[in-house]
Image 1 (cartoon, helix red, strand yellow):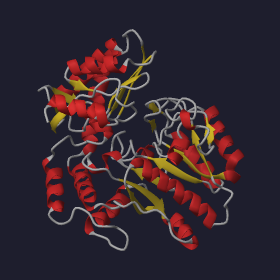
Image 2 (image 1 turned 90 degrees about the vertical axis):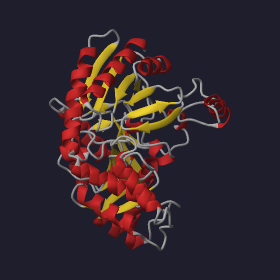
Image 3 (image 1 turned 60 degrees about the vertical axis):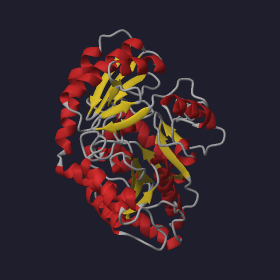
Image 4 (image 1 turned 30 degrees about the vertical axis):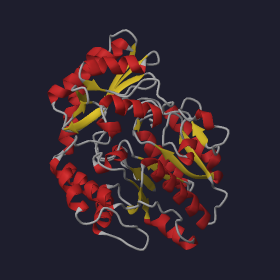
Length: 424
């Protein structure tokens, strides 16, 4: 098919994320990718400022990850996980337990981030039933969050300002505290601490669990909150036998400057969800990790009745193992620290531009917030014209580049964001 034929067929048949059919603006046609660059069918090259939705942390066509996939294809691409097991899945589970906060000992492998949140919620609901608290079937969270697009995850996304407000009348009604202050680098607010404690205490008898994104609220607004609020949640949930879930799908594997964002608070949840960067962006895979206490509770009442067809897919597990090994050998902390310095240097000069209300950087995340909704087609086209791929949303133009992005390409990303701000 010619590029023109591909785009015509795309418009006729293909549904893209968060889009109508056909989309209002045709997508850019990617022909190949290598390193940190996407090659378009028309010959242009774009530095990927998004890591393909935060997943391709090592860039594209990494020889170690390519070799892991090729080697595993020669052994087996897939085998059902019911009644069978295999080395890539077992190795991955063991590595995740080694990397995760202390106490998270058991790993449920899932297809995607949303599914891992579904599994985490199911774990908590089933645990509460097993220990004699069946009335605890609601979830607590704070506003401004995002946890995925399937139904229970949608129910704990912000019901007013979030993208899933359309479904408020059919989703389970959960308990929402106000969104946390965006005060990562300053002193935590004791007034907000009291609000969190009061919300959990008031609903403790009906809450199975509290679920939050630690330190960074991603798709809900790219807001950075103080780690202290995670410690507050840990103390109050433990005091009232409410379970605590950390959604580290976006923040896990180094993106915020620590392997997991929870480490900045020095606390461990009862359940943790990971995904996105887990396979280095090669294949879809996620996981829900839980404590031994939760596993024992569920076992006392039966089995965890969840089993995706592609659970523990050997290809995905093999490349995840290779990706996690790369993180350890290539000094991810130094890479992310360099990203943080480069993003601060490149984005801070944009603060005085008309319409800019905030510029913020944490780890490998750089955000420019505007005082109006972004004209997404115009902003995207402006960045593409500067040789950069970005995906703005709402009032935000942001970047989460691959960890291997060098200083020159970081400067190019910052220039692309500046162009997008001007065009937005």
